[in-house]
Amino acid sequence: MKIAVLIKQTFDTEARIALAPGGGIEAEGVNLIVNPYDEFALEEALRIKEKIGSGEVVVVSAGGPRVQDVLRTALATGADRGIHIEDPGLAGADEYSMATVLAAALKQESFDLVLAGWRAVDDGSAQVAIRVAEILGVPHVNVVTALAVEEGRAAATMEIEDGCQVVEVPLPAVFTAQKGLNEPRYPSMRGIMQAKKKPLAHLTLNDLTPADMLPKTKPTGYFLPAGRQAGRVIDGEAAAAVRELVRLLREEAKAI
Amino acid sequence: MNGGIWVVVEARDGKPKKITYEMLSLARRIAGAQDEEVAAVLCGHNLAETAAGLGKYGADRVYLADDERLASYTTLAYTRVLADLVRHRVPRVVLAGYTVTGRDLMPRLAARLGTGLFTDCTGVELDGSELVFTRPVYAGKAYLRGVTTASPALATIRPNVFPARPPADDRQAIVEEVPVELGPQDLRQVIREVLCQVSARPELTEADIIVSGGRGVKAPENFKLLEELADALGGAVGASRAAVDSGWVEHRFQVGQTGKTVSPVLYIACGISGAIQHLAGMGSSKCIVAINKDPEANIFKMADYGIVGDLFEVIPELTTVCRELKSQG
Image (cartoon, rainbow over all chains, first blue to last red; front, top):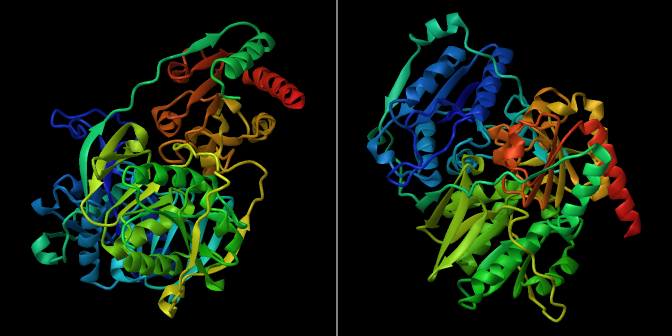
């Protein structure tokens, strides 16, 4: 079983977001982490490999030099090798471009499974893994909370509005991980030492020669939401405060 | 006819979800300036009646793909039907809800059509003849405006943000049945089992009122108090990450950066401190009420109304008053 895990480096979820002088999002001084949903994907890949007792887990990420940090973390956690796609041509990449590039890298080998987080906590666009599935011509199951892999098939439990459903697909296939899929492990000291010796390939767009990867969307600007003002704290003992709250909700806020 | 604004309808037991009406109203607004056609696309089985009802909500035309194999949503079958239809009729814009279905279908459709998609839009505006999409990034800590450079423009729309206009009973849509061609490639996903917990409460992202609990609720059984209040108000129940990570509530009820983003009319935060993670998921609520015994809790900095007190006293009291109001009509 050969498993690819798509990993994205994102801002820490506790990061405060500010605009950079140029109009983009300020990245200076922000702590970078492995996208939390991708951690579920990696953990699932490691568990599948462990259960089967053989196979390979390959972590793939695209971006600047700092992206190596998340790939090394993934290797320390247990992945076997990494692929880092780095190229100035990735600047301005949108979901279309990124999926095109990642799919081109995956196409160079043949994976039985591709796992990724269902969304990244930064842009939250929740598109790239599904687009990769389409480019590879394989089925996907989105927001997966349980995954059972058998010979040539997989049954994935997908979160739906009122519960979940079990979707069966032939392999190869792409699965996007939702919180609840598993409890990710941390890298061990031994893993961190071993990671330094694990292979990490560096690819450029020249190595991949993706088809048209010009973005299909263009950002025209970022803005910060208007901050909310602290409202009114209603004093008094519970019963009186509740009466006043209900009056305000009806008469002032017209919310009930 | 080429052009037009399309709305992908999501129906449940033949009844369109609220987001469908919100999108049809939005489509009418952006079509208005140029008098473009607004078309609803309805995939499923035995939906003739549903199709006929969409005209009064703003559709000029309804494309109806009726097939037994479309009775339950699967990505590949629906993608095939929509992609065929888009290539044939060439709309300018395709909108779908940012729902379980929309977030699964639209990236796949966008990839098949080789076009751009804006996810979870909270704004769609015409700038001359160009459509500008606004969407949250970093879970609403910032917003991005953007345009597509390919056609059609695809977007998923956040529920509960765009107002739905009341139906106009005299409006009718042309219902056009479209051919459904599906091959084995399109039927590779098989739904083996559906496990639903039937709930009388509205879905979190569609609810007008949400009663949400955090660490201060202290134990899973105490969520009953929140459920009673939610039921008295006809609302949904949510939770903070702290409550979910403690194992008190299932993850699908989590509101925040690693949960759902909601924008109800009223959000009642009970025993929630207001971590930035949580605020990102509910900061666009129209009215926020905080109930917390810690007067320094961060949540009070953004709440419209706050009660500093013991939620185990305040919530039952609030439930009683809301029930009284309800019984008075």
